[in-house]
Length: 112
Image 1 (spheres, rainbow, N blue to C red):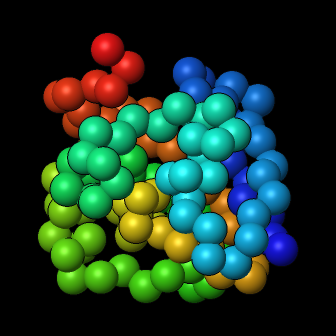
Image 2 (tube, helix red, strand yellow):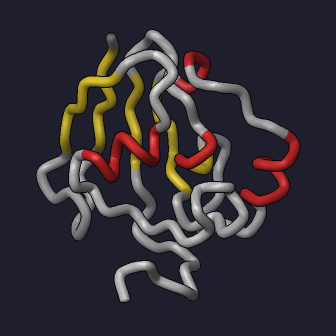
């Protein structure tokens, strides 16, 4: 069991959070299960790029970036070397640090 440290995000997680996680857990689902309502609008298949996050530490311990995820990431706002789509990230054994971008390109919000 590892931990996922979420850096403070002004709207979604103002104080930041430290979440317990098991190897194989999906990052997006972990966030949602812990009331961190990150944007997502494609039924978790990676196509919308709204669940974009930065894996600031521990990225080598999560599932590898697939070619398809890499293609979809190009649509994400604020893309950088640590960018991943949280719906496509399965956690490993090691702790990670996640930053949620300030903005997303969500044109169809699931929040109504």
